[in-house]
Amino acid sequence: MSRIARNLQAVIDNIVASEHEAGRAAGSVQLLAVSKTFGAECVLEAVQGGQLAFGENYLQEGLDKIRALSSATPTPDQALEWHFIGPIQSNKTRPIAENFDWVHTVEREKIAQRLSDQRPDGLPPLNICLQVNISGEASKSGATPEEIGALAHAVAGLPRLRLRGLMAIPEPEDDFDKQRAAFARVRTLYDTLRAQGLALDTLSMGMSGDMRAAILEGATIVRVGSAIFGARTYPSKESQ
Ligand SMILES: *Cc1c(COP(=O)(O)O)cnc(C)c1O
Image 1 (cartoon, helix red, strand yellow):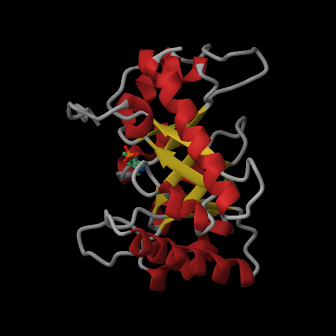
Image 2 (cartoon, rainbow, N blue to C red):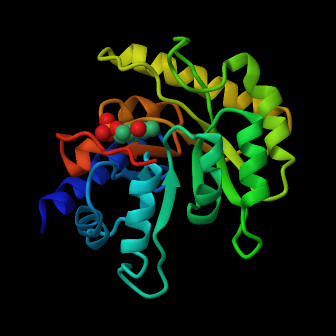
């Protein structure tokens, strides 16, 4: 078994343990393998370990891997699933709408409108998570908790999108209770939107360093990079 396949199995074991600790059903948390800065050969090792869903932050790098791996599935009836999880420039929405299955980082209605307009008719609606800025730093991406309600209702009405839920990247935090508190705030927003009638099913939160806290607070997708692929030792050439 390759190093990546071994790491992948260890992450899956941790997810199962956290699901159990949280009293949640086995399989209620989906693992998104974040492959940014790692080449298609690394993604292929994860595919051979059984992983099908991958997250990419940089558009050109992601498109290159989608193309390189277009026929790389363990069995013919399976497909890889590609999630865009990086910042979105408004002039780069078309290739995202045409090539990805999910986008986790929608923070403005204008971007959502473009993604809906540009989603090809032959593809299913694009799955969308709204990124919420829970830590309140001016530099961070994401809509504010105050903005998220109006944004969610607007996005839910766009024809070629399917609003699935919220995504958050809280400030890095070593203290477990503080990790949980940040994720609990995202969960509260999510519950509020659902109580308003939005049919949401996805909380995208938790990374290599804080996924246990996220799962205990209800994450349904954890986005895990370094725990699977190793430390990112070189910066991505962002050829966007
Ligand atoms: C890089 C990245 C991750 C994965 O982070 P790790 O700490 O390597 O697990 C998850 N989500 C987003 C949005 C990222 O950019």
